[in-house]
Length: 97
Image (tube, rainbow, N blue to C red; front, side):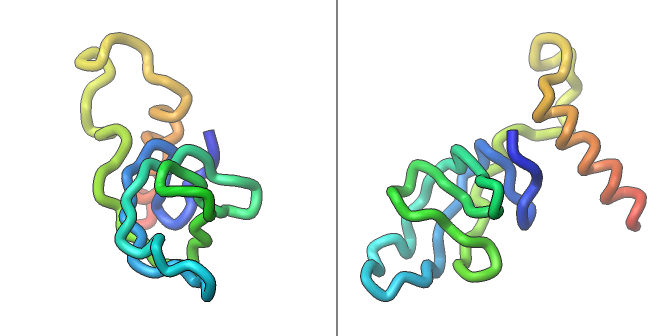
């Protein structure tokens, strides 16, 4: 599971609001699930073949993959590694407040 990038995790549903591609404007308004975040921080997902580049392209997060406020026992057992990472992200954010 890739690291948090611009507030996005793999599995989040996003909507593309701007994609900087002079040859193809059909990606604007597409929605899709983030399937992979590569080593350069580019988002790859179900919206099509082009990667979304955070900081260059624009998107909104429509839905999070998992609500980290749900207790583990409500979802059936031990937390997954991605859930543990999200909980750690939340703790880091609390420390910054």
